Length: 136
Image (cartoon, rainbow, N blue to C red; front, side, top):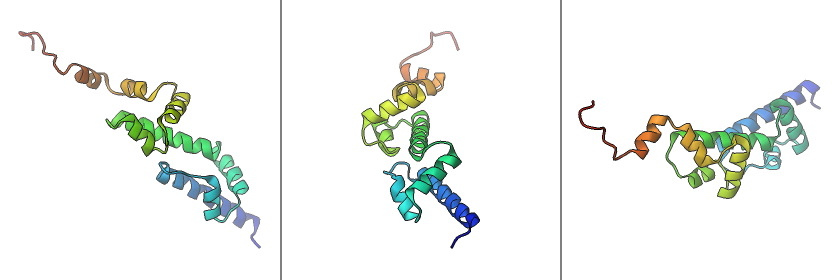
């Protein structure tokens, strides 16, 4: 029989593994019940321990990791929004748009426009701009 300390350590280890799994596989379908089964721990124990340690539910944590990763991809790449939605684990664009707007307060396309440096946005929109002659 396990001591309380051993059980607590095992549960904390399961939470740590779950967090690592989310960060490594956020783009894939992740279900807490499956993770709990793989770690040989009850879903109730893992869910409760996860929320106690992370201060949010597993589902909320996964959503935040996905949206934060999407923000990085929107800011740093030119990948289409549909592709980014799929990469971070959203099967359909409307759900991605809804969740992104709910958490970030703006649409993914507007976020991308606002997150880029002003010069970069200007350069893209002014490809055919030539300064007046005589100025340097």
